Length: 349
Ligand SMILES: *Cc1c(COP(=O)(O)O)cnc(C)c1O
Image (cartoon, rainbow, N blue to C red; front, side, top):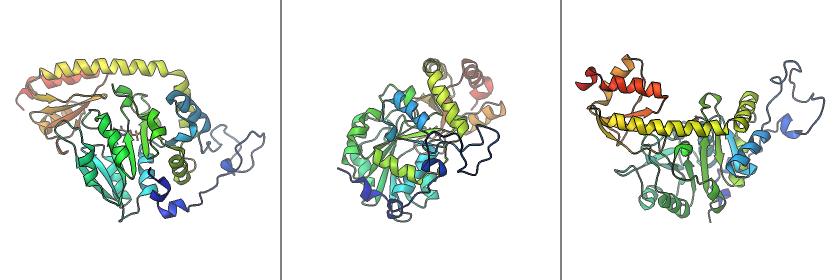
């Protein structure tokens, strides 16, 4: 069994966190004169709940996890950075991640001066636990997996994910940003089996709240308690907490409807793209985007930009030469894209 405490950096283990006015007194009262707030302009004059209790209760009910298993961050970017700071000693420890994958893991490692090691995916954009673990050494604290993966769109083999979690003596972070679009099941209900697993989810994709900046990390209470200790005390604003709570309580059915609509649109988009001369291959997707291999990614990307349509050029990413990553939009947006890609100017590329 992995001993989490011994993996945590010494300075973090010994850290005495900042104690906020709101964490020293969190109960009901009628007069609050403890935080040097301006009493006017309610409710925004008051500091937010640093532990986001009400919002976490709603998320816990929705996700069927305990409140103690949840950390909320300013997008997923915050827990990504916090995990590296919690476990990795700069210039000493390293992290291992599948490649290609989401770019923020490497940026967060670079900012923290922590070595980033790539474990290349195979031709099917999948991985084998044994090969991945060979990239790790005694200084590897975190392994990063992303399923469904960005930018490839596929889900990773579940048995290999399990094997990685069980065989690795550090912490496995599984980014499930696109899980709501996936045919695979989340690992959230397996957290109790794996004290060394962290699952990341976000409100930015299926919940259509990217502008609110709200990400979630789920893990054993021990990991969550330490992450909570090192986060900025008031990391989620009153506005974000209120809005997210209201959306969770009121829009669950609508979100499920959006997901169904986007999946149906993805199927249509895929079929239409397959018939275009500039499209060579469309990779199977388990997310709300398609990775598409084209005859000339740079030229097509630039022509689309010239027409006001922006996709993501992934040509320079490993294993993705010639590829554009296309987000599934509204029926109208997808039709606009298809019309441009089918036009004569694209045939010559
Ligand atoms: C979009 C995305 C996220 C979401 O990041 P936020 O900071 O929560 O907006 C996380 N992980 C992956 C792999 C993504 O593609």
